[in-house]
Image 1 (cartoon, rainbow, N blue to C red):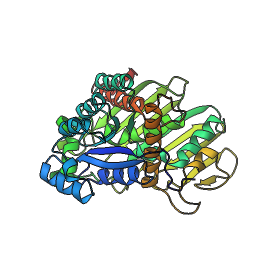
Image 2: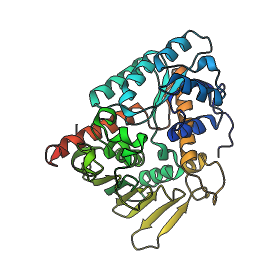
Image 3: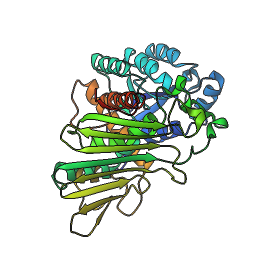
Image 4: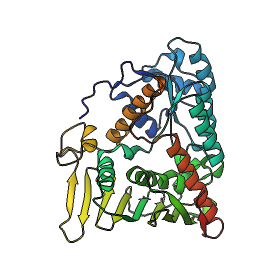
Amino acid sequence: MIYGERAIENPIRWAMVGGGRGSQIGYIHRSSALRDFNFELVAGAFDIEAERGKDFGVNLHVNPERCYPDYLTMFEREAEREDGIQAVSIATPNYTHYEICKAALKAGLHVVCEKPLCFTVEQAEELESLAKEHNRVVGITYGYSGHQLIEQARHLIANGELGDIRIVNMQFSHGFHNVAVEENNPSTKWRVDPKFAGPSYVLGDVGTHPLFLAEAMLPKMKIKKLMCSRQSFVKGRAPLEDNAYTLMEYENGAVGMVWSCAVNSGSMHGQKIRVIGEKASIEWWDEHPNQLTFEVQGKPVRILERGMGYLCEEALREDRIGGGHPEGLFEAWSNLYRRFALAMKEADQGKQVDFWYPDIHAGVEGVRWVENCVRSADNGAIWVEYK
């Protein structure tokens, strides 16, 4: 169990690009990174408007001299300081991720980046090569993958409790954009503009989340081919989609489906994953994250509860409070940031980590999946070999 003690000797000197006033995701980054004293927020380029960003940073107790007008200025000036930043989190619109991440890696910084990492596989592989060349960690914020019951699901599958895996059903299907909310909501407007969002909307924005949950639970299963159909039910969003179905075939013969949607009217969040094996199935839903359903054919349904002693060691290790009390998004993100810090420490010491986290490769694969989905959908929803 985690009691808030430091996991590394000295906090990582940390900065943010973006995540300023009005950014919900920025607050989640800060709450999660700072919770266990593994990071210390010492600098930032929080806003595209320099004075507003500086005012915001001062309200976070950041030295006003270290509240910068842009990320390039921050990287340059921090490199001149003996106590300069060691890591940066990128919480900006999609179209900026590639250039910021590239500049950060070239500046010798560890990176935590919002997804998508970038827009093309070519760009993603370039960033992966830079991370390897500079021995830097890049973490991707697939937030709920840090929840303890994802570890329990991974454990059950690895131990053969489900038997051979046959079907993986995934969805992230909410209803908050069932009408053209972007007309009055700037934070949604850029998400439906290809110049800022990239080649997709819901495929990249929500679909990659349950896709990575599947990758975390089933690390050995690889996609062989897929077929994607995407729609723009709110017409002004075309050519970007607000709904998509993706069918997949895996190399081991299993099949999968991802429903990515922002127009599922009435749905609050709708991120679920169900893994079906020859003997049993498991299901997890992020609106009820403290329960994992375990269904063995011919036996009563079991509800596995977070924090209980019958769970595996990996699922108990990152609990922050005993069973019965709910843990959710903030705790899952905090667990990820703790892993990011440990991975950064190991990289600085020239060591390899012996634990998983959503790393640069996960970022590359998310971009690869979206690229293949768009290629399939834009060619008439055909089956395409996964590449």
